[in-house]
Structures are given as C-alpha cells and as structure tokens.
Image (cartoon, rainbow, N blue to C red):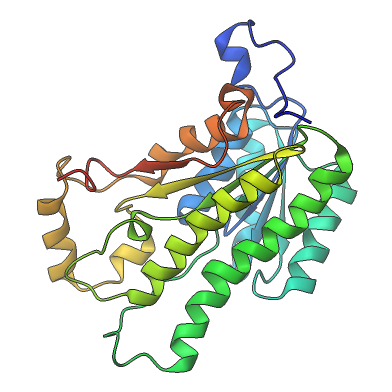
Length: 268
C-alpha cells in the first residue's frame, strides 16, 4: 500500500493546512514548546486536543484557556511517558474519548548537564527514559491506533533538537545530545515501517525561550546568541506553524524528515 494521498491535492492550499475534524495528543503539552503546539493545532481547527502532562499545577486551567481562546475541545490528561503501560493507557483513553486519534506529538523531554566522565548510571538513564523511551512508548501507542484506523490515518511528530545533529558548546550534555540523535533516527525508522498507515517526522528546534533556558547559567545564555546567525532565541510560538504543517495534508508527501528550526545555528 503506497503512502496515502490527500483527498483533494489540487484544492486551495490553505485548506491543506486545516485540521478540521482531527484529534491530536501532545505530550509535555502544559508548558514551553508543547503548550504552543497545543495552541497551534487548536488554532488550525482541530476537533479536539489532548494536552498530556506529567507535573503541572495549572494543566487543567491551561487547557481550559486554550479551549476558550479557540473554541476547540481541549482536555488535560496526566500521564507518565516513561511507563509504557501508563502512557499506552492514556493514549488509548484519548482515542476512546474522541472516537479516534489522528495526530500525536511526542514532545516531552528533559535536559541535564554533566561532564561525560561524571555521569552516574541514574543520571544517564533518567535522560534516556524520558527523551527516548518516552518518545518510543508514546509512538507505539499512537501507531497501533493509526494502524487500526487504516491507510493514511495518522501523523506522528517528534520534538527532537539541533543537539541531535551537532554538539552544543559550552555546556556538556552528552546524554541529552545522544537521546535526541536517537529520536531523529527513531523517527526515520518508524517512517519506513509505518508508511501504510501514517507519516512520521521530527522538528529539531535550536535555542528556544523556555523555562529550561532561563534556569541555566547566565554565561551560557549570553554566549549562545553569538553562535546563532539570527542572533536571538526563538519564541516557542514561532514553532507552532511547523507542527501544524507536519500534522496536516500540507505535508502529505513528507515522512522521515527532520525539520530544523534554529535561526541558522547549524549552518556555520
């Protein structure tokens, strides 16, 4: 079975970006990039958004606000991407609640910074459990639903990082870099395996203005703009269009791609 074609490829281009009737799930959806992804998918007309979070005191309020702003059904689901049974149950519940699942964004991730010679086993495994295992478990759950729904049913999107294709300086973060490189190749692998029932792509952001950057040493954050041709960080909201593109029929022939959005950081 070939990669699915959109219903009307010669239709108005703006219609290709519409997510009307689509149900989406986003892990790490309560803050940062994930929050803006939820907002973007809702703004593009999705029928329902499942905002999946692990720890947030305001997830329900955040979901309610997006729903109020967009007129789209948005509901928060607490889950744990590192536990296969838990995230699988959550994804299955979302599909049950809304009758289907069309879009899944594996966005949950963490970072830490240690000299490569100093990592403890727990520090290494913590990164891999969230960033790689969590991405895989989320994708497996969504992929099984896509397969049951039939040809061309789903769009799976991973949030990777430019750290998966280069080594950032001056921070030391071998585990994070390795986890994101693995996510990029995981997406390529799944794209080949899932071609009959879904597309699989990655977004690799550069330096994004999130709480994660704000918590890091000032000397790092002052150094990074000097390394970016665009000379500034990215507002998370500047990424939401890319996720809408990958989720929609506008990217119907795009699978296995890694979309780098970094202000030119990876170019020099």
